[in-house]
Image (cartoon, rainbow, N blue to C red; front, side, top):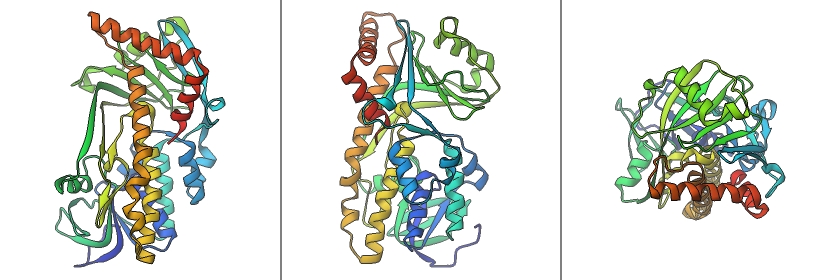
Length: 391
């Protein structure tokens, strides 16, 4: 870690980015005897400490277990299978683990998963170079901002939505399908125990509010806010006051409060590349497509794509068979689009108009009709459960 590249250094696969996609991919390649190196622009402390999503789908848990990457989540992850909806019509809870395919989530903070994956990658003899910012990718050659370079038989862009991997494919003519949900969240991480046993979704005329447990002492909250909001304008008192209003604590009970550890603004946008790669450059995770956080699918898509890409790269590098790489998009995109369709549906359910004109009243009436159908229809509940936990 931290050493300079030798001129013309080569490896099997250069992985750009040390998030879940890059680290799962690196571990799987090492397990099959493929040389690789991970390049990460941030330092190790930043990589291991960034608080992100925490809900792993059953498929992701199976993938991690299948490849011996589940020690931490097996020991410390908590299964979860209920979600709760609040609105002016009252409150109801869905036990989605008893619906659909009978699958549940495992709650395990993403930063802990990243720490586990990084430790296992290093234990398996993998090499990662922190502070190595990729600036250009061309024909398997990755040039860093400091002028050093390394060449791989293939490059895996796992460096996120603004990374050089995605930028390279777009510059080469790959198209993206995009959608702006027109919604912004203030994402709040609080040092406070969960106030609800379930994931909480609150529909309110002032905007959506969400409650998601992370650990026994930390809870993630979301507040819908205007586009362009500065998180610095939201004091702790304002955050807790607005959460109490939208979560209707006067009707359903008080929140367990604590210091706000983090507040950031998230614009809900989604996009999918027509193809996640070609030639010697392939993408996984947010680099291949960004999904809104409405249904907690991002990290789970990253795990799915990393496993599929690892298998395809192993075939190409050990048997000279590029067929699996050619099929990588066809293998992943149908499931990616199904996740996007459900995430889009969730966004329309959670976010109604906040004005008082006639069209807004119509939109809110549709929103509550969707919610009532979810409350009363077993068919709708089974659909919700299958897609909420599926990937």
